[in-house]
Image 1 (cartoon, helix red, strand yellow):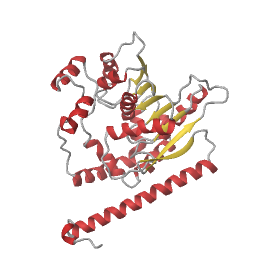
Image 2 (cartoon, helix red, strand yellow):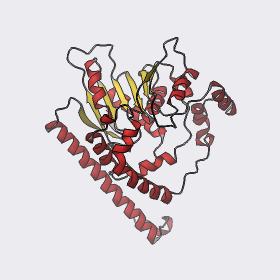
Image 3 (cartoon, one colour):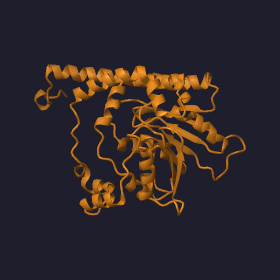
Image 4 (cartoon, helix red, strand yellow):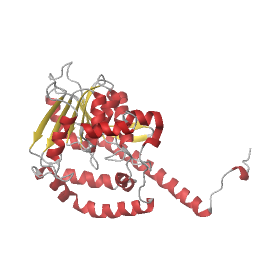
Length: 343
């Protein structure tokens, strides 16, 4: 039966054109990533000599690339849980290739996943938050890995790994490795004061009970300004990828090779990449790492490059702050200082 026009909220001509244009762009983006996935899988099956293999997973309808490696023959044991690796902002699963090959010699199967919005994963027009990436990692462990695993993460990937570990629990996540992890870490007194302001509740409990109203109001810049700023930032970053990476690898600048820079540049040209970059300006209130580590309650290894230039050169201070959360005496926390930069 025909739909009565008066029952349908009508769009203006300009709004209709904008909606149609956005729809066409999304269809084209979906096709782009479908073809990219097909290309990756074909190349991996016919032309790759690497032991690290490429796969794809559909998460809520979106294409997500991940990589795997099997333990070397004769090295695997029943006690060697797989390691799931989570990259940082602007990076991808391929960041972990060398480490995965090394861990395979120690008897560990390894997985690395592209967070949605990065690498060869799809970059849809959605809101990108730390809670979105946490859920992706949790689902990846449950649906793809399907067994108890270690979670390892670098930078924002470290915070994402810690968040996922707190959600999964100790039986599913048998340990966490934080490599120059991002995330808010505060003193015991500050954490106690913040909980007192919420009636003694953790932020996770308060959000579960009160919803998003418990969070501070989010006041990001207008969308048009974010988009314009994102494009301008891309115009600056893309020609300078190698130089910027060398700055954050002060102890090992030779690690910044053509493969690394070309991968980052390629990923930044995907449809939707600008929207992902601007997400950093509108992230909601994060749960502190104090709360996450307490909620997780399992073993955490903290490896920190003490020469990390990001975060205002506060690597040593952040390294010491972990003692505000856990004790090294009972083995729940192990800290390893490294003569290294951010990664």
